Amino acid sequence: MNKPISPLDPTVLKAYNMGVTAGIQRNKEAVAEEFAKLLSNLDTVHGIGEKTALKIAEYFMQQFEK
Image 1 (cartoon, rainbow, N blue to C red):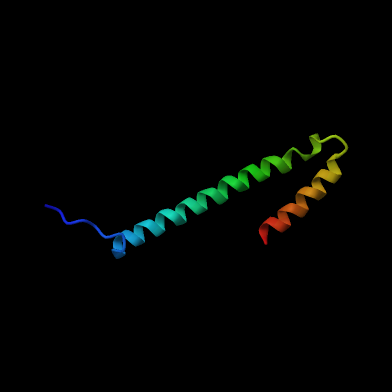
Image 2 (tube, rainbow, N blue to C red):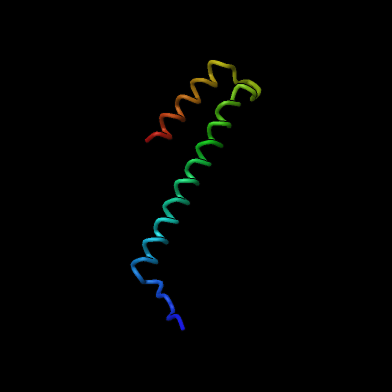
């Protein structure tokens, strides 16, 4: 009979942490992709022209990098 695996086993903790880290990274990528889509469509908002859309996008990209 196999003995139960403790959730505090170092191997289990390492695998768990690797999974959490991978999930966080994927979530960041998904958010960045969605953010880029929103920024690329700013000029479709009534009253925002191409130049203003570019300025807004540049501002948010600078803030996002911080």
